[in-house]
Image (cartoon, rainbow, N blue to C red; front, side):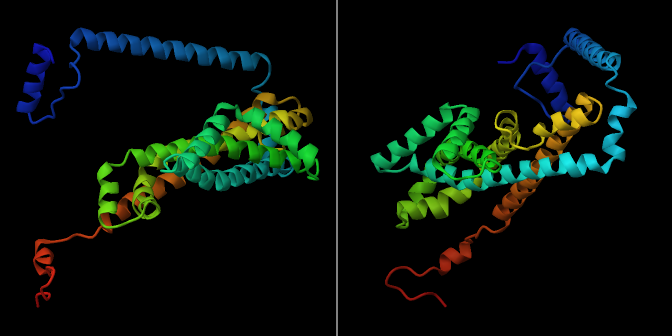
Length: 314
């Protein structure tokens, strides 16, 4: 229930043609002054923290132009360190995405199976790998590849990183798929059964296509996690990804650690921004397609339908 002043304020806005709100009380003069005060205090505290960080970096000579010039004037920084590391990051993330998405979809559908054995097996796999940190999965995979395969030590970190990312993220994506399908109205399944569709046909042609749009934001968030988690392989397995390139760059260009970390962070941001942009465009296209391709049955079409035992109307 809204208070008297809130109702009167809503009535005044309605009289003026403005949209009224009943979800919260409209702040009065004192509340607006208090909110303004807290905003000013927060901005002042944030400015003080930023100034403290910049002052500390300047005191340690980390903001000198000489530490940032190699990224603008020396192409060897990019050719030797950043671009190869960026390529490895993209390759590992792309392989993990390509493998984790269909595996996650299968596990998510398996958790919805009518067969208890399939449902229990998929649930066990999902809960097991989702509970283990992805770094431990990478370390176990690296040890397993070293012990039981002939994969060369140079490429083994890539295999271990991709394996850990696939096992963990497929389990998380399975829950996303399951939640997206369960979020659909029960009438979709009932309608598919009414026209004689089997369970597999209902899942393939009715439930999954409709749930993709609803699942897309969560899927994109998990894909961004995959890109960022490739850095764990560089930290623990010697995988030559973006974060691992900071140490050799800093050692060869005058201990410009802050500059190296900043450039690597910007590359990660740009990479994830590109991924998010593509996903957003895909989501908009899917939504437009759903709005524009649906068949519409008009009253005239209903009248023209032939009843059983009667010839169609001319």
